[in-house]
Length: 149
Ligand SMILES: [Fe+2]
Image 1 (cartoon, rainbow, N blue to C red):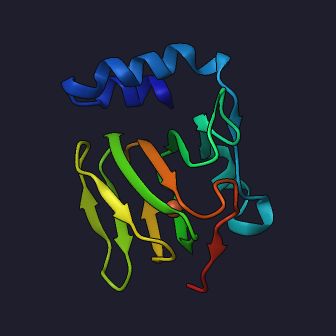
Image 2: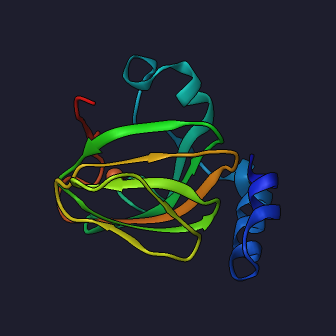
């Protein structure tokens, strides 16, 4: 998944995604959800690695910074969390949904912000999504609240 994402990343992010690909085996990857949340297929294509935060190699109580992976053809249903979240997609144009708005494509390089408790969802098409994320405020290790679809 990361190999294809590195190949598809725009020039400004290609080196970063390639570095993530090359270093992936040495990073600790986590999943916040279980199969009962969004199904087993989702878990096969979803994961994150945290570099800064409660669970990262660089400790912080105030901010969490890491990378999210979402494989092709996945639906990350509506959810919300107390922490404010900022995403920077690095590879893959996915459909993103915020608040009451409909799904809209977001290209790599376009920053997406979810204020505290704003519902949001993502869907990938043919491309995997690799995105950097920042969480701040609230419980930085909390599982998101899953919202009825
Ligand atoms: Fe989120």
